[in-house]
Length: 153
Length: 241
Length: 82
Image: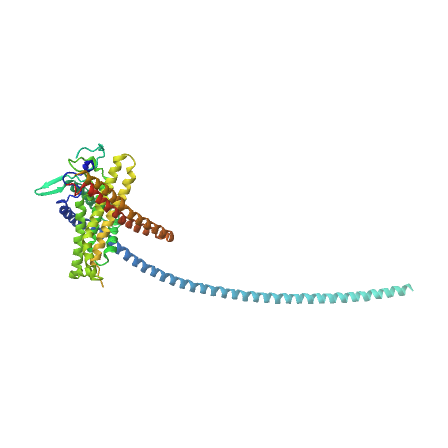
């Protein structure tokens, strides 16, 4: 009947309080001090130093970023000015070339007109002379015809 | 007592047997101290190895230690509060690490291979003396925390919303260590017993998932003990308005 | 230790664990229900919910463990064994 209690020792048992309790408590307190010196303080120092380092690095990086942004803005403004200047130069050059082109065109036009006029005048005079020649030839031919007719009669 | 009908050579259950060491009139449970020294030694070795060469870029064991430190700090900070968590972090952390190492060490190291004249080696936290010692330390520390932070005004806590709460709060002072110690003791002992009984019935394969479950509950119990200890301390130092 | 005490102790140990498992069983069921609903509603909070759930499971579990401790007392450290 008592086989169930086989595992419980006749002395002691599961709930056997003795000097183990205070000694274990003292041991844990001691362990707390040892771990505080060996573990919590050094590791805490390193971790917090790193956190500080990360924090300062971040603020520094933020500062640097702000500087970079400022520089970028400056450069952008410069670039804008340069672009405007270039634009102005381009438009001036375009206007100049336009003007030159127009002048050249006008000159060419007038030259062409003059030479055309000259040619026309020449043509006119030649035509006139040709007409005159023709007229005189015709007169001569008429005289000749008249003479021949008269002679034949 | 007689002989048991079901004692097998490889899986005998021994509950409540101890290896007694006698010092004068004091008697202590030798097996508890043997395992706890081995486990504390392992823990301290890990800590010493990990903190030997600390660098800003952590590697190896230092990573693990920093993870633990961070974890313990979060635990202490959320439970105790920003103001005094620093003072109590080593205590909470030691409780956590000691219980965790004890539970896992008791489950993972094949202690049964070492024969003792009486009793058997196992998790130190499966002995009621250890857990009561830890729980009483927690009680003392929350009293100390309350008294050192608020002086005699600490006792306002007992009549805080109304004086009717007084008896309940006094009873709580007794039930806190009781439940703390019995929770830990019962869980770890239950894990060991369940595994032992299963090994006793089916020695192969079947106990393995139960062992994993035991590892899981062991870890959770360490966390719960540390969390509750921190919560009690935080309750004691909290300012009422 | 007479047989009546032994029998009563064994029965009581069984009852202590068995009855002690009912309440936490129900409690764990409803806690798990709540957790599952929470995860279904907010899947991104799963990690936090799981942590809290495990912690509260352990608290409920310890109620059963108290019953187990009583059962162990009755079986292995019976105060009435005489």
